[in-house]
Image 1 (cartoon, rainbow, N blue to C red):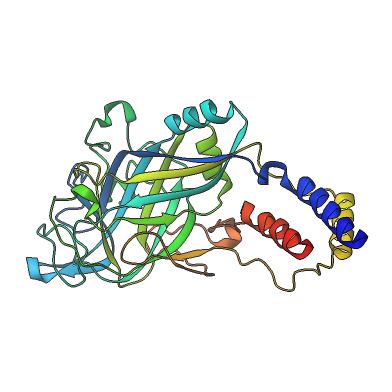
Image 2: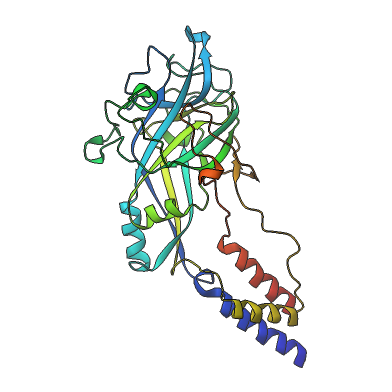
Length: 350
């Protein structure tokens, strides 16, 4: 009996020490719609056009759309911006200013043309095709003006493929300092509905953006988050609905918890805790925590498969290499890791 009481007391102490901002602290999720979005099209006939307020945008490898008479292959990149000021205000009101930290960030994107191999109505877009794509975080928010973007989410009218990738283009430095947040797999779905995206019928998908320090800081400060979607292979063609599509605005979901972000435990405390774990009969973890670097999403709803992978963007102006400081979808040591330790401890002591 004494041994059991000792274990219960020790486990309670361990739980209290580990809890901190990870313990029973409250958490919440807030979301915002995009403030601006557009896409870039490399088709020589279309490369100098502004494609905001078009209804849909493409993330596509260099492919043609012969079914619609578009025989010239063209690459497509999407740009989507979010204003997180309302998210900061919401969490400040819920937890207190400066008394919360971001724990997870996802985007929710709709697709009004989602059936693989079936050409969309608009010939400017490529035919949906399965493949991989990147989502990157931009440091440059100068491609749109939130004050003039309006309800349709207009980008700057002079933003296009040529002004980004062409020689001497005004936005030639748009991708400088960009960070790949993750590489994702698009597999298509079973819905084609044109502009009818009400009631969430347009194949909504969540894509987790991982634990990126700059992304989290931007949100904590209520700043803008600019995302860049690009092909990660030579096969993908993913059509994403724009803000101008009714009921299908690209959304950003942020989860936060009370308290400041966790910091590594001091060495002395780590030794103490490791000794406590030994007393409780808990050995050291034999395998490493698997970092979440690649998300593979199903046709609908939330992603179900995770894997480890690093990829390089294939667009003409390549992102920095890993040796140059490229950040991929960082290691996600989520609160659940410590929660599992606490839970396992209490179970062993019951």
